[in-house]
Length: 169
Image (cartoon, rainbow, N blue to C red; front, side, top):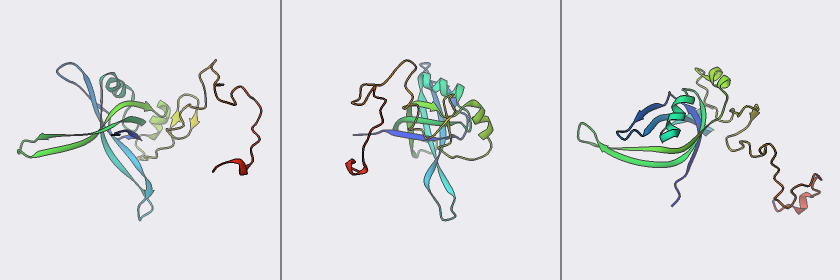
């Protein structure tokens, strides 16, 4: 079975950091994630997705990400249940995040707060001022001193001469 979740969105509030009786950190938060389409009025709608993150990642999230922060999370979906004070069974579905990543600088976060704009693909990735989506990251920029010449054309500085007829797509 596969249970993987990748989300990019803005935090709707500061993370709520608590500790279990065993002194394990746990933070709960909600992400506003834009839907990929517009409604009948031509406006984007957002889903508000509850999430939880544990241990050191929980403490880091509470310290660094604030309301309005654009973050990316990876994890899985989990459903739990409990009995409320009225004796009714309540089911809760949430994302259990295993990792998170801040997707814009502190300066960008401060300018975005209070605007209510939950656009996903406008994050500043790292300190280099790159623009793009969560999935682009820094995959095209290897670490300093590292060259990726493991591929069949690695180390070659010559451009590839390929016609469109040679491509399978």
